[in-house]
Figure 1 (cartoon, rainbow, N blue to C red):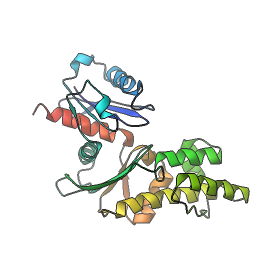
Figure 2: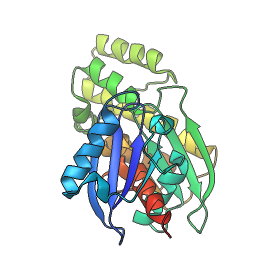
Figure 3: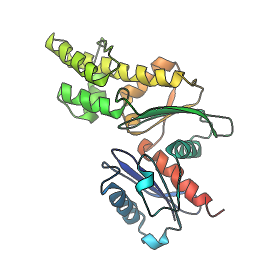
Figure 4: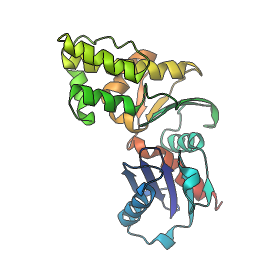
Length: 256
């Protein structure tokens, strides 16, 4: 077996591959670097695959917390691992939009699937999963309910602030004036999409566009991004573990 671990700032992900490249286990734990997350996610995939830890031949670690993990054969950047994982799943991918809890990145691939350029927003919560958490708190709902709420909106309320703190104040003000929470949710989703597409436009967007990361689970955000860029967006199954998948593929390559 070959193990890939993606240690993020807010979650830990892992994937186990066999020699043929088939996924035998995958898991997500909602705690990241500096916590018990890496151990928990490792225990989870080992149990899922029904193997012993000594059955793992090679391990590659990626993500924000990769340098803190001592039991890997190699550390590889999340940019390379996301590209590797996406191309394995979507051969003709040319643009990757990855939006996690604390950052957003856009990766452009060449015709061979290699990284050509990338841009990352890791200094501001706007356009990330953190923004969704703030939105859910303001609208008094669960994060996984936001997409359904936005789908019921008719006229999206404009959320113009590029800063999450100010955008939160805008949403609170809109609630105070009696705007429907569905319209506020719709407007906030559009705001996230605009931030993400603005980031993507800095390096150019080419078809086929693939979205990964936890925010890819929010259908309203994906739909809003499609409208902003005028292209369809492919959502892979289990979008949160794509970086870990890429790391596992790199682990398998270590024996070639």
